[in-house]
Length: 337
Ligand SMILES: O=C(O)CCC(=O)C(=O)O
Ligand SMILES: [Fe+2]
Image 1 (cartoon, rainbow, N blue to C red):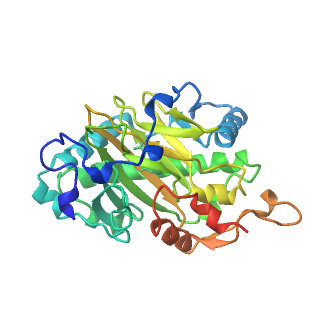
Image 2 (image 1 turned 180 degrees about the horizontal axis):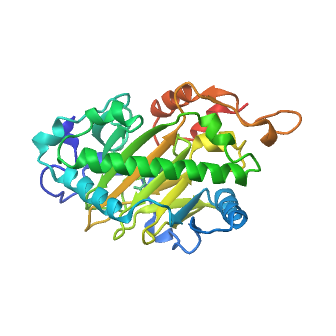
């Protein structure tokens, strides 16, 4: 129901019952460690061997890292944040037109995660849309704010290019040919999520997004510079991923965990909310096309060819992912050999 959107109407004084987590499922904010670990990788580094080593370490140890000198225009990033915030400030009559809780719709404004399935809601509204190919998808994007389509199209193009560059580095870091993983991914999809977390009256009782892994191959996340909220699980410890100036956060998704035969992990992460300031994040998900067969390259499996995961298509995986709640067991567990 569109009435469930958090970003419409007046600010909330109390956290409604349907957002309150059971005591064991709460974020336990006092136990979260500060971010002095998550690697910052400088993509401007001219020593490729050093760069590949850094990526290898970041992917193997954390599954998460930040990148700077990434080639995405800083002014464009500023415009993107502006237009995204403007979108969530639109009057409710305008937003309701785009509301849907049907996960198969290619452009939709929704709330929480999967309101049709879940029992406890999350303190988040989100705009999701497919980006690739642009000619096919842009006509379905919001036409208000009027600059939305132009700014977001250019952003999607630049971030997609960055995605391919990162996948090349990841491929090399696994000892594969530079283009090997990009070849498997073929002509990947690009899905976007603009996440909006309004101020929340009780951040210790709920989540913006509960612990989850991303079902796609690679996620490139733009965080609000002023407001923290992203946390990542490392050795059973939740760590804050503080926004680093002009950086993107990059994380390995479930498909790269499968393709790397488990060498790299698609790690649990979550978004927490805060009492005073709305937070924005923009995720670009690089995902295999529906028919792509996900099967780890021979070189990563060994002579006896015993891959950890059975072969599957991305379509099969994605359906399974959206048929469940976000905070259940790792979806890849259901695809083990
Ligand atoms: O808002 C964030 O920091 C995390 C977003 C996220 O994990 C997602 O959209 O999958
Ligand atoms: Fe995520």
